[in-house]
Length: 312
Image (cartoon, rainbow, N blue to C red; front, side, top):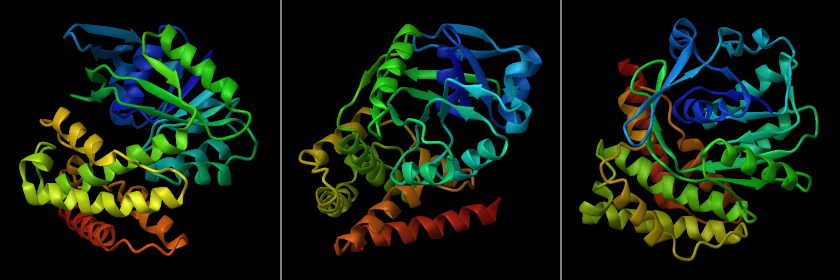
């Protein structure tokens, strides 16, 4: 199978390191990650057991601009950029006449499917992928697989189920655990709820995930955030019954982790708040549901985002 991974951050690089064992993998990403790979001829991956492996990538499969891919057609394109980069990367791929038989979106939050459908000129299968594999980039040209998890694929249309199963088999053949998820809508809302609590609260206080449970007032605020999200999710047809325990258990399991939003703020980068709490606010408007806690949190993160980017 010919696979294009659009986005070579932690998750994109991790998937590349495994999928290259069974497929012809092309990487589209930024020079800071691809230049060392091109120079050395390999991507270095550190496995959860501490062992290091070198995965060969010839310079011919590395691209920092879609135009370098020469109007190629792939079996599947895995879109692993940040949520706010979904629109520009898909637009660039379309403009460069890069095509695929299937697209998989790995972004956090809501709204990415609508963005993709607006841009893609062909009615190809569009899937969502959700993974809880732990990964980060210790230095350019390397990726650390911090913890094994599972990747779930779900259909976002009538003709995508077959592709979901093909991708599950591809991932399993590449030694990545994967399953097909029938109710992807519920899973997306569940992940949104987790991220909409842990990410902004840890970013605001510049603390690790353990603070969610260690600070009673922070935990209380998390409950208030979830109360609003549950109302909106229910109105959208995705009731979240035991979401509070799920969120606080995740915060406990990842206690020593820095959330992606906390890292983004520290590095002066844009956050994904628009696709998390921001998406909740927009969906709530459609159902005339009030979300004062999420509104306040959203505005605080946007202000902090502005402050952190001005420092850079």
